[in-house]
Image 1 (cartoon, rainbow, N blue to C red):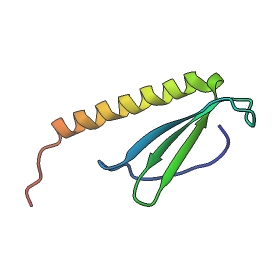
Image 2 (image 1 turned 120 degrees about the vertical axis):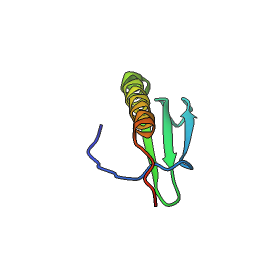
Image 3 (image 1 turned 90 degrees about the horizontal axis):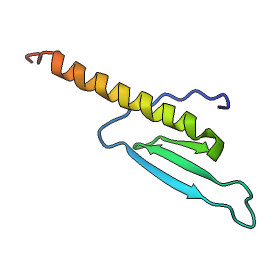
Image 4 (image 1 turned 135 degrees about the horizontal axis):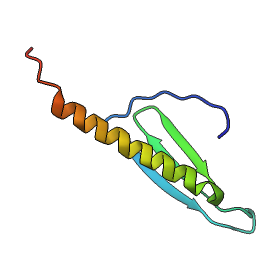
Length: 81
């Protein structure tokens, strides 16, 4: 990965989109764009076929994070206002 640090809050309305860029006469290398978008922030990950395993690792980490968040929700008691 090239060097860039981005922080953004993921919210329930965060959207994701995968766009495929196949080989064309102008483009010899196929890739995909994985976009994660909120109200004013868009993060686009450009992934070539040889980086598929890195994308799988990212998906696995995201799944693990979601499971931890769900567990936190089950454990954390409601706070009275």
